[in-house]
Image (cartoon, rainbow, N blue to C red; front, top):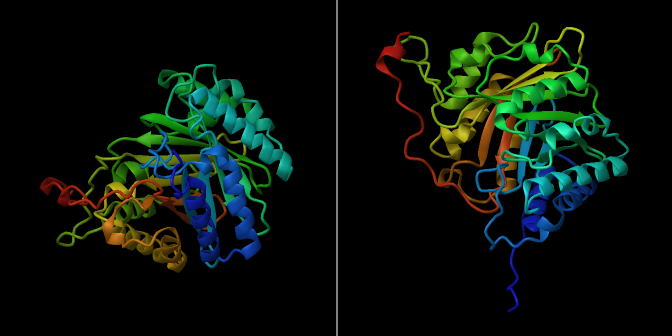
Length: 377
């Protein structure tokens, strides 16, 4: 029986890229080139009809192997990025990883960057029988000129969750960051190990940690950057993004922990002399603490304006991704992240879901009510 004509994963995501590129001011030529790049990275999965159930992917809630993000800085257009799972639908985690490595190396040959740092870690993150929710993700920063900056995300639990700390420690050591592991704060587990590949001003090695039941006070103590963000700034971002930014009788804001999806911290290393990270990011899963995307957008706008950044590109980006009303779902804005890098102004990242397969319905309750004893603490 012939299958009826239907939308494909690649067609859906490529059109989103074209519209997002326009929303952030990239040229038509760049937009077209980046849409082609997305289709190339997705490979055979790009032709998968959307009326088939999705393959399993940890990358997004509805298993779309694509996620977009905007990186905002003051007085400049935001940078558009796309996160992809090249091995989506490969049939096994081991094959997923092999496909991912092949695609990254093909990109390296095409754009003239080397993969030596990734090659040095292959045995750590790609064992014969890998475990965990992912093998390799590839993120592309879509900059003017049609040649993206590339980075990869790897799974510390590939050889077992119980060995993830040892895997991260050894990976840092191999890359010359022998003292970096000791500088990391405590976390509940190591989620990602990430590398910048190619033409970066300061190539980073990044470690992502999961923090269960994270509170604003806890989050304020996670940065290990010398001269990094003030505790008050981190707490304020946490409370705004999580929907806790309310005054009660003139007292301090209630310190309600994230008791649904956990918060994440990211620690970026660019030099090995001090052993300390040069960058820190706090990621709040806003989609689990807002009733709908209208609320999530309001919180993102508040953070952007507080740091002198223009929220208009984010509004345009959401319209570029979907025509639905923001009040009709939650999850289009998945995370908000506040980024601090030594010597640079703070940056805010907004992570945008493709929603190729499903729109998560709005929630009836946004956040837990503050405990009475917490109000005046």
